Length: 297
Image (cartoon, rainbow, N blue to C red):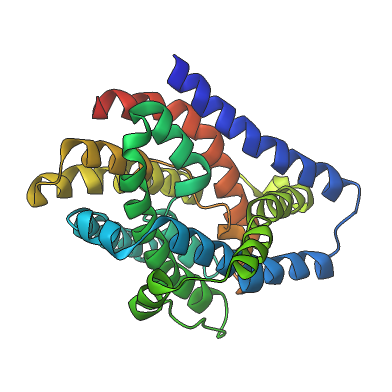
């Protein structure tokens, strides 16, 4: 029961920030220009700095080597889920603008904001290295694959790939303390700005056009069934430790990334659909988590 309450607290914390954005949006604080500014600020400044600070502070070569057995499981399961998502998009005849967003929901998750505190509550601090390994895989796959397919689906403005070489450079990088502190302050704006953006987008959405149709249900199927199932199937093949399997399964069942609608907006995809998916999966995570907690235990 304590773990379920902790999951609810995490979702409630996120919901408060989204509601703040919704309130401000409904009172016309945000124009299209300001939403464009927020999306660019997040994707071009705050989020890259957030990633640099997190990767350089939490991961070292020794950590990566020690946890390297888990990387093939995390990455391969995401690739499998990506393939499943692409097949679903193709055969379900999803309209342009939603294809990349829907496919991305199948294999990338909200690892740090909700996944880390929930896993720590469930397994203790000993799980943190495993969460960070999944986070590293999730981050790389998000920028190499998810951002790319969203951009290709939305417009011709395709982002540069976030390469493994870039990751290696960041792992070796030791930033001067003043620079690190500045990066941390700016990177910490990522989550609040993304939540305000989601709330503002939801407040401006035409809810008469938003239903629990097949495109929402397919996204929920990918997020809460396909992605965790990928870990459950891959883990025995590689033979990773039981705790790593449990942590990865919980991480794979997290909601859609909070920056998904921001990227969709930035690359010309259907950001209202992306915001709806983020809100719905975050709320439903409270219902889904007890089941997966029972599965991994």
